[in-house]
Image 1 (cartoon, rainbow, N blue to C red):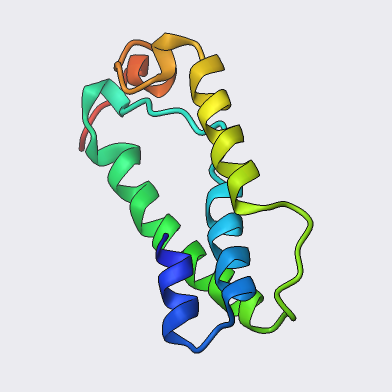
Image 2: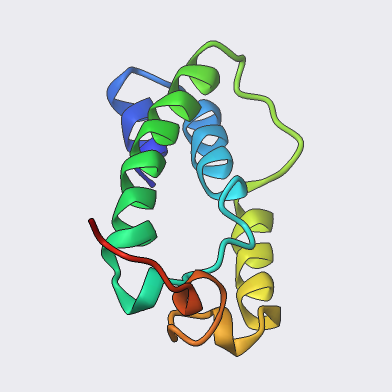
Length: 107
């Protein structure tokens, strides 16, 4: 939604705004939430910073386009919902899988 907001602020058309929002979500499909050793600082907080940067990139790309795109925002939202439901439970903000099980030391 940050991509859509940025595109509106930069004077984008409704089609460009939708395109930016679609790109912003599309590239996050299937990401797991697996905080390392249960610490949400890694990678969840870092992911937010990268997502903010990508939102601005989606804004730039959408503004430079005519706003036409092949995948609708509604399709991305539906797909994100289905992907989240299909994702094994241990990867859904539970700290039970993925990097959450990693052993590391803080130096």
